[in-house]
Length: 491
Image (tube, one colour):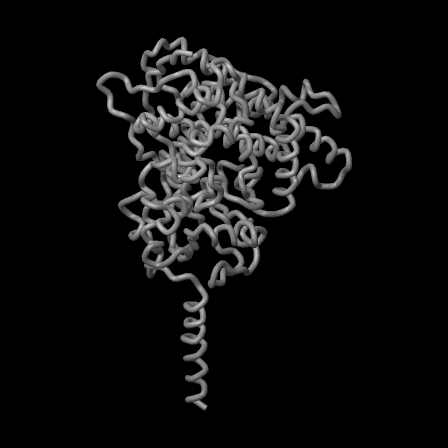
């Protein structure tokens, strides 16, 4: 009897462990309490996790404190999880920093999968289509801002200019027209406030990762949390002012922008009674969704444009080839249109190469499984936190030759010179959690870049080295600030 009991105990302990090892992703051995934090030291998280993927495989498990996190670093497995099993991986894990950003999980970006998230995603998707993502209307908005941008750059007369403010202005105006139905001038006090709090959030969210590993640290005196809360207080004040102005101006049944569309849904839910308005369409929900669209759309496109200019300063031969292509395809005074993308494959390939080399969010926003599921050969129980390492996917040597080298031609067919689709490339993610503003972002990147390079030659100020391509890790990976001389080109 004792022998049988010992045999049963051995099977329960070691048999189950063997089963978990067989079906759970491999990974470094975690230490008590701190997990694999020591393995993460010495480099940015996306770099360390890429190194781990080479050792443990493209699906592995790492301990962030006591929380096991599965990291996916393969394009096919990422698409399996995001598209084929998209609903399974559609959850969001609550974290102290993202809870602060999202009023405890409201809105779209950081909300957990459920009815509230679906309500706001549908409202936002319809608003983007209605108020800006219809391609002709969106193209006109971007082209008008591109006209202003080129005029602003021309007024600099080739003197050194930091592109941060004008790029924020034009990208902000495109998304502001959709969210608020208005535009800003670069000296507008409200725009400066918006740029200020956005920059503060980029500098704080993700900077102190220990807060999300050990949530109790957020309750202690912390400079990062204090700065983040100050930025969020300013953000909420600006957005609330715009929302309250819309309450006054909104005409029932005739929404003019995203805020109107959300207020319309709120009013309809309240009229229907029940708890929908309170649970999913409260004032806090509306503010958070507006911030997700406005703040997210502004920061990501501006950052990518700054990366494009930085890479072109390092590679004047690429800039010259794009300008030769523009000169061949377009007449001197022709407007640049979205329909020109197929006729300007090298320009489009350059934009894609920048997105490949410097994904704005190298680790994206962590996902969470909402039910027991699997990816590849591994089982993932409900509630597993999952990260998609876009940096590793975009630098995968199995798919890209010399992936650390900037080479737009890798996106072109060597025989036809036309764009090649596919590849280990996922800058906007995919599936139900993919970027809602993908079409708008692609249009902005193409039209703004084309107009700048058609009208100007980019040069570094005399005696100044090109900007660093290292980037600052955070909620987005942004380049350091730098200046450019925008030299007008002859028509």
